[in-house]
Image (cartoon, rainbow, N blue to C red; front, side, top):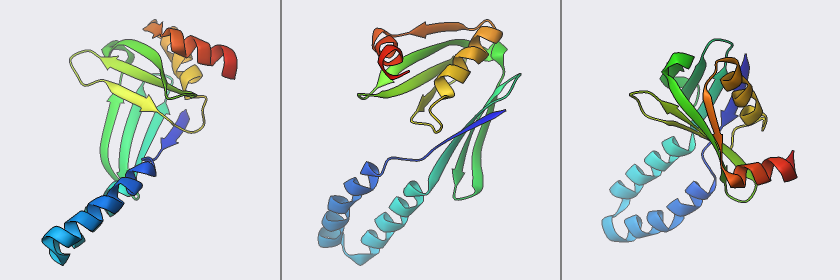
Length: 141
């Protein structure tokens, strides 16, 4: 079992600075406090992705409380597409039959794409790689 973790980007918090200023000047302290609390919750979200031998699992936490958990069996996966996200980041999109796709970007450790590809080959799941992703594999592997 491999566990991979991700957090929201810190750039998201930088976006809240002008929002705080605008809300405080326009609506007052009550709304400012509400926006501040909401941004605090958003910044404390953690994502976890696990690769087991027989299934994949994705979980969302606020602090240490589990708020969402989804287990994906190989039969439910139609294909996995590996893409490039930004200049040097690899990402993967897991396409689910009759469900929402799962997008994996910026998980630590960075080996999640290779392990996910191994999982796909073991379970005979279709794998697609974009040209940009192949360039990243060649230069950063």
